[in-house]
Image (cartoon, rainbow, N blue to C red; front, side, top):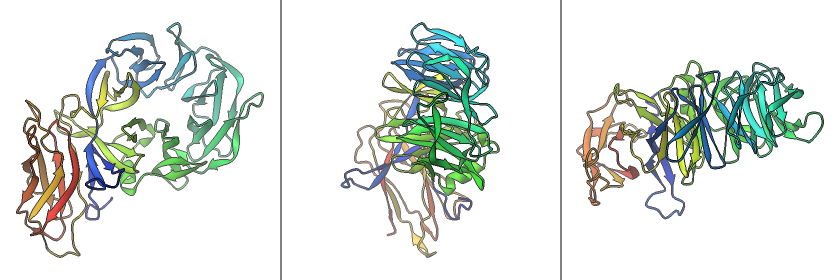
Length: 459
């Protein structure tokens, strides 16, 4: 929110768990998000995108197209004409297609041959999807979209395109979801379907258009049978939308929209999505922000993913810029370097660097009356210390603010319990009185963190 005196809450590198039985100790808890550990390095540039198909994994690093194997070894299969910017990858039964904003490339799976698309009818592509045997691209800076020959991304016909005409805006991007083809302009969206008609098989669905567009093609993702994107409409921007039938529903909050609005150029933003232990995450990277904004679609709650730079101690966006699921592992590509990581809930650091788990509470007040804070106790998973090294004697750090979150007390540490110390109590006493208090709870040790409940005793 704009005024910290109204709401100063933050949940960083933690997300809510909701009791499915209704008989748990509490209705909700907060647990730590996944950490990352290095799998391998490939090429010499940032990881620009990836895809998994038929048990094989592929990534673009800089201007090189790599296959990565389960043991971390890799093979360079080809070279692109560009070195930076997001790449989009899709697959048909025999080919992978890659677009980089200027050209298109085909990798043939059976022969391992990589080639640039040289068909004179192939347009300058801005975005890519696949449906019903066709690779489909939007043509850059136009309202046209094109289809390849059936199951052959090397061949394109001069007549195999159509123009989205319900609104005069250019197409930003597109995605295939549940046999529907969603086409996003800057201010409007239309949904098409394959009718089988000749000469062009795709036609708009009656009534399937609405006045909400897309601000950044890289944010268009499918998750849990819904489409998510960062949107614009004629009245404003900075809103995250999801599909609701053939319409759009707002899923961002005012606090999330304020963060998005802090970016000076969010049309170069992107997102990555994944499922993990019953949760579905939409992770939004807004250009210029120092945090990744993550929606847990399963609960509707937002949290932040933050990387703390070990040299400067500054907060930055999560290292991941792309994700695939391969060899029963979540593999993410670094947004700035050529590193690939394994992301796991059983990893409690950012590739060996401290992973900061933080919760800033809501304002605690009783109609501006003085309230005694004799004891604050957290019901947490305790006794989680490591055998040796950092985290052997893990601690929880707490500070508080009595002026709405503008200034803070010194941090006060208490133990989270060495390994096996399951009777440890996470508590602080003699915290004075306040008319309006906010607590900041933080853990940086590389151990499992879960907060089940919090109790404030005024006596």
